[in-house]
Length: 315
Image 1 (cartoon, rainbow, N blue to C red):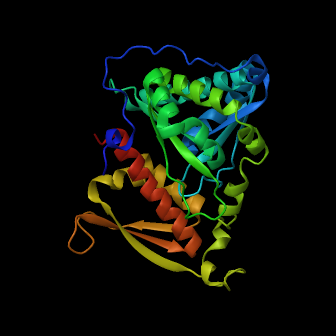
Image 2 (image 1 turned 90 degrees about the horizontal axis):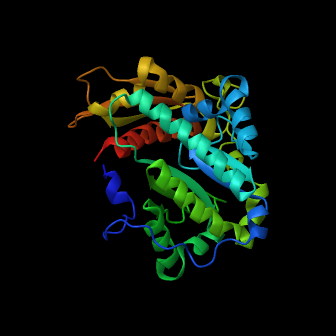
């Protein structure tokens, strides 16, 4: 697995010092103009943001003045098993809400891991392709200045043509909460000035619905079901290999992760016993049974769990 560091545009080598503020800050008119930001959170993190009976999300909305929306628990960003949070309001309201959410998730991460861990985390923003140019700049000049000023690692994913109709890219920010917030402030202040960006505000989750409009429920898989005519919905079985040391990440505490993957994807998942490896490897066998769609969804979520944990603690 690649280490986290190599995945990101690194911070400047020069001694850390605050760069002077950019010459043009957003006009007061653009600060008041409604804007929005979208970023990814895991299903578990989405639950924390919502809180019991919606208490947390209501509190964060009232503290910030921003509107906070989440994609439903089966609406993921294509190619991931992460849900989408969209925050809308004025620039200041949006930044306040983002900070409340990221601080809460960071706090829970510390509590869960206990030890003195490195407080650097990553957050993935969703930015329309049409607006990426405005934050990259000529020859990467703008993104380089954002990296210097915020001290966060900033990486923009290449355009992904694997998903029909996906017109967005992921902008990954790696750093402490303060560095991430500084980077988000710089990026969003730039996007507020971009007319293309505000036009994309009103259809935030459309591709999530298009990509995931599959029957995840228990009736969506299994022989003899009502919708079993097409090849996509016929029950299949696929076996994949996952390194023995990563099986715990897939299973989760008390089986929590594997139950969640099974419920969300609609697939049945069976893990081979200890010592029962894929031929010629030290990989345990994970057998996924269900419709092709359910299998794809489950496999994507399993690989995501392993990749995310490896990135977080792999260097």
